[in-house]
Length: 593
Image 1: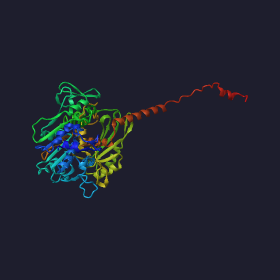
Image 2: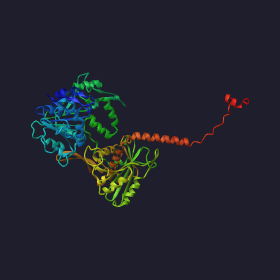
Image 3: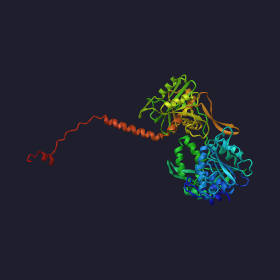
Image 4: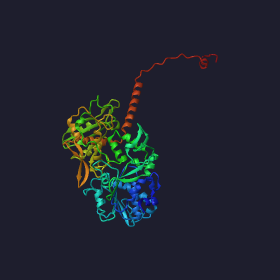
């Protein structure tokens, strides 16, 4: 039996992970048949899938696991980006598959039974087991014989598993004793130059899915350039045949995909590699992709996500270095404390050995920003004086031309220097202020859960600084003030400010033979850059819809203005109307009673 035959015969999709639970059918995603059937194929050493979202890549991995457990038992290693994502896979994907697929349910003992071998990170079955680990857990990659490695979302892996090196390479080393080893890597891609899945894809024979046109029969790869729609109307989207201009509906597109075939760009070398974008997905209408593109095209960060998850391609920035002189041209003067576009204010504090540097930023629609005020407080930080001055500075309010008095909604203060205890104490006593600590590493969330085991159990939030820096850099590159993410600056800011704002750049480095990207200081002073990162994190912590919040503030301002106008109107003296005759007045005036 091949993997696809096994899946059609035995696999049952679980309600936790499938929109249509029940019997699995490979024919619904015909392009997955060959990648599955390459497992166990003579001469195939590695299988790589550089796929977009919504093309059933997770189901592919699950089918391989089920097949191996049932028909070809062996030691299996499933590798996830993090420990948390491993737990999610075990609970939400693997356990339900075992429960709902009868032939697998018989192989794995119940969790409650004694010595069941069924735990969150491991499932034992006759002839083998599956271990599940995160790329950030080096202990899980310790020396153990493994025949099958299934690495999911490899572009989100840590650069190194502790101090032991690349986690994917460590996992692959565990397979060296098996002549029939299986190595499968699957992921949506990340950044150009630092993408593991793109490197793996390029090492293989680079296969693409070619589809026949339902009208003229000409074969072609499905490309975004052939997607058409009427301006501003994503529901009119259709696919245009690149050979004869035939118009495909979604039904035509799905029929063409089912009739397609894989074609390799390079000779077979033992590594088969596949690429698919979301145009091939039978689960998503073409109009959905167009709608997402229109929403993202003005925002570099959203566009990056769309390129990665819809096109299944790596994102390449137009330039890695920010030019400080260009940003100086984005200085503005505004009447009063705040420009009209500001909806809310955040603050950030960078703690140095002899000073505190503070910046307040205003945020508006579509993440546009205005750098409002920058201050430096010099002093001995082991004494109360500079902290008292900082409290006064952060308590300052500003007058908005429409919304009135505004204070800082969220404040981040860096705790990574030599005054950690003092920072924790200040954050506890200052309203809307949290201590933060930067954590390096690609793919980390912008703001994580509070750290444990801190001094005096202080609430300290880890920041995925590499992730935030990508967001900050993409916004600083927006030169059109009408585009989302545009950054404006107070006209009083000088050259030193902008040089510090552009003090870091993204560079590609090699560590133990593996390529990775790092943010590197190119100037000695980078406090302004750090403050922009912290302010971005402060906004992220609020989790607000800036556009919706501005509409609420405008509505409230209109109501206030209307009420003020009504209350300031002079009272109109009513005119006494002479009472006419009617039966009541006649009765009251009738003296005959």
